[in-house]
Image 1: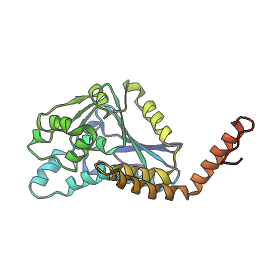
Image 2: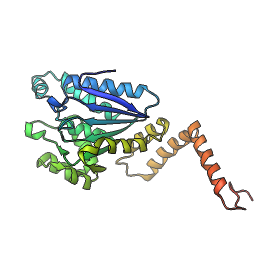
Image 3: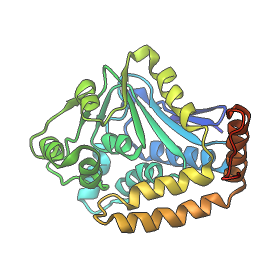
Image 4: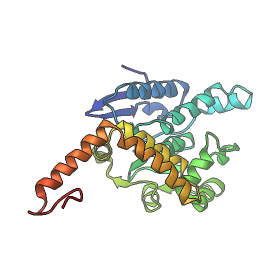
Length: 266
């Protein structure tokens, strides 16, 4: 399918969405949000797709929300701002593994889009800035929660209340970005990470992502143990798990030293 503001293609089991609105610095206008949501729907409807890559075209990853939409929200019309939340929320809630390829500034709602992804790859030109308070508005879309969760309370305070801007290297040092690469290698680097995650089936990836979300902040190991035990038993009952365990068992059997008995046999 074709959309006005995004380009898409599939590489094996990786679905790539390119934000292709360089004139507007890939800002989250209403049409961009609709295109992004529709593209994600397309990716998730294809059972062969396991990983979603979102990458920016041009000089910016995403310049945030449309100022006109914010002004309309100030007058009580929040429809387009809510659509912005729906767009990066759609990324955050996806059962697919999500990778952001960040080629330039990620600002405000654009930072939210980067935060919504599971993993971030950045070029040396990338930067991350909250900027909500510069506009005289409170952060929105779950920004404070995502920022604190990803970077910790101290850095979240620095970015929100002191206007700190993170460059790619500092973001990498803080663990927010997994790798910094040259601009010309961004796509290849993001795809390399994506294909690693593409080895794993949706049936186990989705529940694992859900566990990462729900156990964050739990103080009790026992609660996490109970949650994981139930999910692990569900996964053990799947055909994929059984076939993988059988394959590993067969590989061990063919490489075991002579005389070694497996499975407790004597």
